[in-house]
Image (cartoon, rainbow, N blue to C red):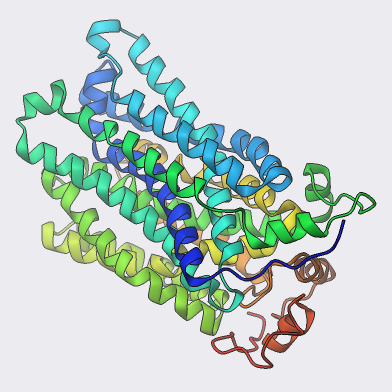
Length: 479
């Protein structure tokens, strides 16, 4: 097959790629938002027992979908590396949207008994299976479309979609709870936000159907020959790229324990542990998330200029130092909760903004989708998605309402250990030869980042690239 080189996408194409990636992530987190913010209503409608026990069961059901995510990563990841990112993403967003709509149609426990929680568990498993491919695929899709020198900035909009979807779900649940009586919310009002996932999914399918697969993937496919040795597949991934799998898993533990403790568990924590009203417990995280959305593009752009690792160090160390004082501040009342949550969001934003710029660059094109999906979903399923249920259980066991803060500190310490071994990925080309070289250097123990000149000289586009790269990260010393 004739070797060809994919051209860099136009600005219009890049904007469409950003939208196509973000809409799927928004749909995924829209479901998390309405589930987390409506868990009290869901527990009362679909589970037996007293309010506290039913809420714990509902949170445990939330965690079940995360236990299935690694299976989704194992299934969708290799498919995405073999057949393309676009094909997988078209299927995952349909599965997510249909399952979310069906949650809003489940009969109550009084109507069908234990079939109600059982159906919910099955639908959450479908959501988890599809999400196992959705997030890794969307991050890879975004990263492979973005210019190397601005991957942090453009990648931050994937997480903008995360918070937008979560905020939309939360705002819908809050709006209906304000407009409807408590009786109406418990009877049927909680179902309405779930039905909105249908139109969101259709929009996502439409946007993705109008896109080609990523330039990096198309270039690799076009340059392959029948005689080329196969470098993809799970065996190759585990045999040759185990180091970035472990490093990324450690980072994801910190990332998602903080993520799900702040975003998913916080409404329940504020209402049941700190005594805020239902509406107040919904308003606090919404204000904080809107604040974080404004910060994400700036944090992404900073990572393009100074590197991903410095931003991660600031975030992890800052959370370890300030999470306990900020939790005490949130316990003082509504205003303290708003300020404390916003401050935690400020400290967390540097991690969140750089996910899709940092993690895909750890793997070459042939295993990028699978490597990201497996490492991300295994760590998330064990530590991230279980964080709400674990925090609730530990507080009930110990009576200490500060346990979420301790849990975040422990996770951030794990993240700092992993960060010591991560090489800098800012400015790194995602073309195969450069990514393979980077991982080989990582296995030999290189910890310093490539300079901008190294990145350009090794890129397939070196003959046309400028001799300097504005906004490239400076040479950083190992941390």
